[in-house]
Image (tube, rainbow over all chains, first blue to last red):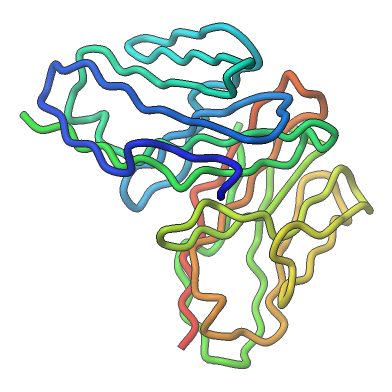
Length: 110
Length: 113
């Protein structure tokens, strides 16, 4: 079993829909990261969370430390949101090392 | 600030050839790391460095060498390329401290034939 599991693996939505991507982890962590990767592109850090909730524009990230679960929400989705969204965790004791999920591929259509 | 710069963006090597993937950052970040990304798998840590002169192995270090002579640069060397090293390679950096996030480079797509 991978230490970081994401669901769904693939997601297709219509423009304007509310989107949720989930991440579960099985290890103790110091922080959880949400990353975005456009096709053929580099990786951009969206959020780093150790508790609670963060919001940036139409993106919202939440984390429940007790349940070892995080969600990334996209409100009013747009085709430019089409990308792979990656969850990663920094393990306790080795805070500079990341363990990655396999990503969720999102396609938003008109 | 340029952030994290990786060169080259694309490279094709023959089996047995050697090459160096370059990574440079201008943010004075202490921590730098190399990852490889393969289809169907999460990114995996190859090597990392917590400061100039200090390097350590990650999850998949075999076939790769690194050095950190300056804070800015963290090159990844393939001594004798193998087809199994065909992958997309990402460099990332961050400041020391758990409150800081990561900055990633744009990646190097390497094909070994």
